[in-house]
Image (cartoon, rainbow, N blue to C red; front, top):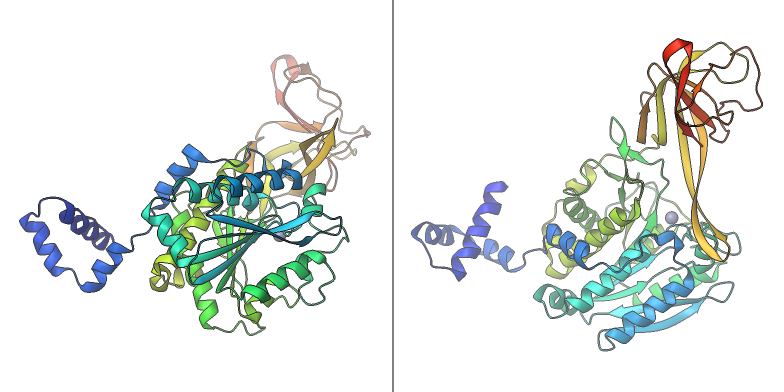
Length: 461
Ligand SMILES: [Zn+2]
């Protein structure tokens, strides 16, 4: 495979530069299909990453994006390139927020992309604005012309604006829009169904975020992206549509692997009779599900938006060039199925005095976190709600952050000051705060110091 790649580069070079004897031999040896591959060369993922790094316009914190900001950004996208983009209001949410359909491109293949049908899953909405900006800025380039000449893209950013306003999964009726494909009681679901039926797109991209506990592999790593070629029936039958979405997933995997090695998983493809992806596939628009997951950083969003941008452009480029036809579905099928083995913080090998009057014992402490958005003094803010989810021997789990507490004592935080020298609490004494599964995180890590005292090394809350 590497040899193929090297020879294709050399034969490309030989066209524009002086043809050396060696290159001429290579050219002669190159079969016709090879030349075709050169002319349909992919936009390199590394190039997309470089472009994103230099030019991205997405907000640093997508959870803070509300409907008003999406509307402001959409208006700017369209007014900057009125000949490129059209926007159509296709309906309103329960609370009257507009839901919009952006069209770009004029090619024969219709593609539907929608984001944030779950209100608290904003990464792809941010990435779509980077994608629109990319199309505008690079419209003069062959790759973008090829994309817009082959495809007509129909994009619905933020399908569930009421949920986004509250940063919650469900819509204002408290219904999960993604379980409403059959009953169609949500306006958001009706809008998506009506748009699909009107356009009958060749393929759809359903853009989500997944739980931060989602892991992949052994030892478990963060599943930063999970892919799914969505099934349309219980036997999970193969069809030309499913083959296409498997190939698109293979393209996305290969594009993202340099940036998230070992952090790409796939979902089990059990048929969900009520879900939109499954039903769109059944109705004739096979769907690729892209789920964005955790990233091991205190500021995870930009890296995840970047992955989404690379995934979306790479997949669409592969469709436009028909390079997708040559993709190997096995590159998708061999992705490990994701699991739920990731903690936000894992305190390992601690000696625990849990505050409940029981003797000290050795345990790992698994902490999970959920992001919330709250409005404080008129401004939206991201907050982390942390909880102890498990205690004991957690060696088969992974974590975004691991704290080695070997040799340290973990105790309930009784208002300690970091760095202070303290006495070890008497384990026989019951306290108001205990360290237990299901509770909030209020723990201190004490390290033995001089004269029988302990140093407060860390406070977690
Ligand atoms: Zn979702």
